[in-house]
Structures are given as structure tokens and as C-alpha cells.
Amino acid sequence: MILATTTTAYDEALTGAAGGAVAGVFLFLIFLCVVLQIIVWAGMWKTASKAGQPGILACIPIVQLFILMMIAKKPLWWVLLFFVPFVNIIVVVIVLNEISNRFGRGVGTTLGLIFLPFIFWPILGFGDAEYQH
Image (cartoon, rainbow, N blue to C red):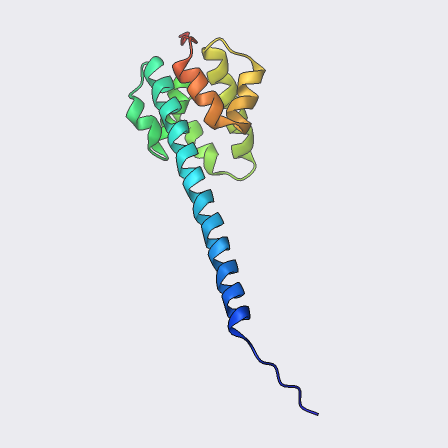
């Protein structure tokens, strides 16, 4: 016995609609990520400017690592540690904690910079926190 399957225009329309919905959600998520990244960059720019560093450099990948080291008053060779797996996680926590401390903030701000950077970088940059040399 041979079973024959047929597709109808209805099935093809549903498949197309599902594909369109997936593409729409994907594009929305990309747009959301771009908006959140721009917010983080604005906060980092302003934070770097408060610390006496060129703000625009805080928005350039890799270069921003050097800016963060200068703000945290850590040796520049620590940038190499960002490229060592597992060590980079520890270095990020130490550097962000030191940046929080330099602006007179505590562990809460450090955790915010780690888990909610799109909220806490603008708070640090546009808020009333002042950089303490």
C-alpha cells in the first residue's frame, strides 16, 4: 500500500507565516540588542570622560579594555588577561569592582555593571558619582 501525502496552499501559508514570525522576532531581538549596546556605550563614554579619559575610546572594542584599566588604575598588561579563558571572568569582576570603588560606589554597583550594564553604566556616567583619583 502506498500512502500519498499532499500539501495544500493552507499548509504552505502557515509555514510561511511561521517563518515570517520567527524572522520578525529575530529582527526585534537584534534591534533591542543594538539599542541596549548604544545605551551602554553612552554610559561608558560619559564615565570615561568623568575619569579624565577620552570618552570615544570607551566605545571601541579592545581599546575600551585599556580605558577600563586606566580608570581602575590597574597595569595595562592586565588587558592580556582578558584573553585567557576563566581568568578573564575574575579580571572583569576585579576591574569593575575597582571602577565602582573609584566612583565611591560599592558591591551593588559592581554587580549591576556585571549583570545589568545597560542600566548601571548610564547611572555611573550620568549620575552624581565623581571619580576619585
